[in-house]
Structures are given as structure tokens and as C-alpha cells.
Length: 518
Image 1: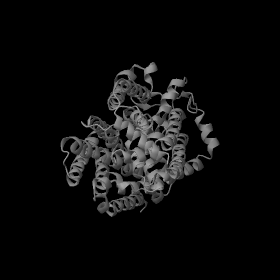
Image 2: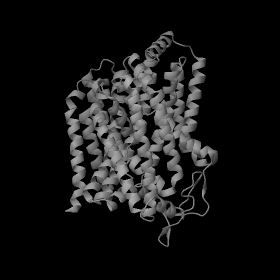
Image 3: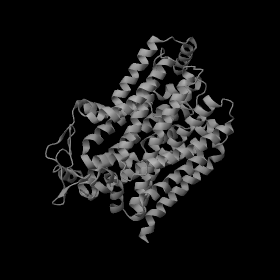
Image 4: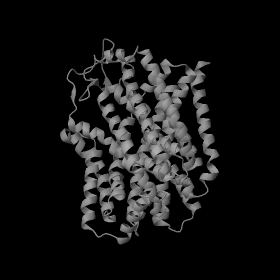
């Protein structure tokens, strides 16, 4: 009987999510504004919690604990610190300005819309470039979610990873296809609650099973570098598998270097927040800019608790099960391993639903935003400007299916590491859109030529740094987001200072600032 309790809990959860999708289906399909932005009707708590749930994804419950489990606290800790700071600052300085400015700039309902309208471009170059980068990076992002759900179902049911990944992907696609942005945001609110309860619960049972935090620390001290904040442990690997001796994992005696530049580049994860569309869209969708302060507080508390629990789960997991997961890919299942071994089956199933919640809350956002970029910004914005709402919706759903197929192909490898996939897509958005978003909101003299230069420099440099420069090591071994973000910012400043300012764009900026200061 117990063997049915885990899937039963997850099936119940999935049924509720599908129900939410059908409940909001009619309203979501009233217009593209409702389907893609919920008619700017989100309350403060739904805005906050759906933003963070869609942002963190299964990476929070699998990727981040996996990093802490495999190489110790260093990478996970500084990444979490950067994300925590980035969350707060983004809500503090970007949210209200973007909500007001996006309404003034042609009542924009997508990020490419906003950038295009902000600079009053006629040829839609900015819109087209932004839409293409969104399509590329969100397809990568969606593949990370499909990897997550494939690993989850494979670990639970022991069936082939590929079939489990496809089954999970089909569920996500059907849900997104039906519900649209409003259903996605409401269900994401519920999913954020499930995620944080799951993290705190697994952390609680884990620390209890380990005999307290003191015992965890004592056990981990025997692994060189595992508890260092300015050094990193180095698992001894043979053919991608960590070696075991005397029932303990083997680490090199000499810990790895983790200097100031590496810490700075890891903290730069926080810069990504200024460019990730799934969070920025929530800023645009909140019903009243005055409610943003409430949203900021809720989002910051949620992120602090969730990130802390995720990092500690990885550390506790290594103390409890030091040799259970010996590859980088397998280490990302430590949350599943702990929940399965330490909790009653039905309760464990609810905890697993936390991973499913995280995956759904992110992948539906990624698919919806990517499909809107193609349908709304490329199809209607550039190629067929007279397209009706119905035609745009149809194009969006066809695009959603095609993106999902490509993402599934990218997710076929069962040794894919969620953390690495997400870090690349995060860098892509942070460097492509982050500097431009900040300069659009805070610098009156930014020009459309500067915007194009900034996006192209940031987006291309992420690929160049990741694929060509980073393998060289040394100073080039830093996270690609930091150098790409800096170079994108410089491109915007230099090109904007060399190009002509549009008086109408300057007037729009002044109007937005007046509205902001009311």
C-alpha cells in the first residue's frame, strides 16, 4: 500500500494544478493582454510569490542542494548571497519604475514591447533582437526544467529517464497551453507555498536525523575544504565518479582556490535579476504600484528562507548519506533521497510535489514568455502587423509546442546538470537585458542605438566567455555573467553618447518620472 502513497500525493497535486488552469482558461483567452500579462490584475502577494517561484524553479530544490552536497558550502553560499541581495535590490529600485514606465510606453505587455516602445523605434529592431534572445535562452531554461522532472520521476518510479522526462514535459505543456499568464501566476502562488514548506520540512527532518547542527558540522569537518568560505573542496574523481575509501567519500587534501575575484563573480548571480523576464513581467502585471512594498517584503523573506534551507539540505545530506550520490548529476537528487528515506510515504510525496511545483512554476513561465516573444513581438510586431488577437494566440500556441519539442531534445541526456544549464541561461538574460533595463529606467539619455549595442554585446559575450574564454582558466574562469554585464553596460554608455537623442523619448522619460514621484 505504501508504494502507492507517493504517486497518489503527486497525482492529487497535479489534479489541483490542472484545475486552476481550466478555471482561468476563459478569462486568459479574452485577449492577448490577459493571456500574456493577466490584464495587470495581480495582487501584491500573488505578484511576489509567483515571481520568486517562477524564478527559482527545480534548481532551488535540486540544483543548489546538489552543489552544496558535492563540493561543500562555498559555491552554494556565495550564489545564495548574490541571489538574496539581487532579489531585494530588484524589487526596491526596478519594480515600481517598470510598472509605471511600461504603462506609459504604449501599455507594453512583454519585455521586448517595453524596450521597443521605450525608444519609440519604428523598424522594431530592438523588439526583434530581444525576442530572439528570449527564444534562445528560454528554450535552454525550459530544458533544465524538463531535466528536473525527468530526474524526479526516474528517482521515484525507477522508469527510464527519457520517458519520464517526456511525460513531465507533456504535463507542463498542456497546463500552460490551457491557462495562460493568470492561471500560471495564481498556481505559482500556491506552488511557492508548497516549495517553501517542502524545503523547511526536509531541512527539519534532516537536522533531526543527523542529531543536530553540531553533529552535521563535526561530520563535515573530516572532508577537506567542505566548510570553507574562501576555498573549495575537491572530490577525487575517476571517470566522473567520486571515489570511496573506508565508507567515506574521498577529497583531495589540498583545497581549491576561491579568491576575491571568484567570490565577486559568484555574487554576480544577483545581477541576473535585472534581466530575467519571468520576474520583470510580474512587476509589469501588479494591479497597483503602491502595493509593491508589500510584495518586496514577502519576496525577500521567501527567498531568504528558501535559499538558506536549500543550501543546508545539501550539507546535511552529505553528513547523513556521504557516499549515496557520487556523481555531479546524481548529487542533485539529495532532496529526493532525504525525503524518501526520512518521511512517511504520503508526506514524502507531498515533498516531491514541491519539486514538481518548482518545475511547473518555472517552465510554464519560460514557455509562455518565449512563445509570446515569437507571436506578439516577431509575428505581429514585425512580420504581420495587422494580425488579430486570435491569430496571435494561435501563433503563440504553435510556437509553444515547437519550443517544447526543442527543449525536450536538449533534455535527453540524463547526465545533464541542472545547475550548469540554469547558470548559463541566467547569465544570458542578465547580460542581455539587465544593463538595458537599468539604463532604460534610470538614464534619460540612453538611445535606441545604445540599446541594440548593449543587447548584442551582452548576449554574444555570454557565449564567447562561456565557450571560448572560460576553458582557458585563470582570470577567465569567472562566471560569464559578470564580464558580459560590464561590457554590455559600457556598450550602452558609449554608443548612446555617440548617437542622437530623440526629443519624444526624452519627453516620455520625463512623464514617467513625474508619475513615479506622485
